[in-house]
Length: 72
Image (cartoon, rainbow, N blue to C red):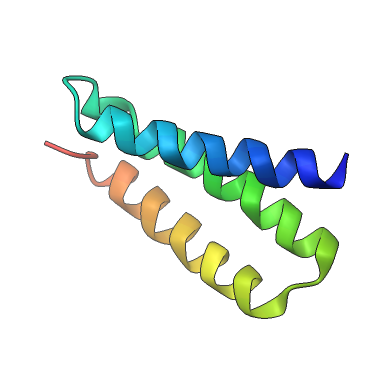
């Protein structure tokens, strides 16, 4: 179960970058937020503190970007 959360997060990150390369780039940020939250939960469970900090920074940056209007 523990590894599944990480694999789902990884799959969603890859999927979000595929969206960025297509005409569906407006869904990139929200998909990447979900992916990063999944990876954040995984890193909290395995107690990987540097990765927790990185994921928290990415989540905050993506949320701010989404609030400011997303990708144009």
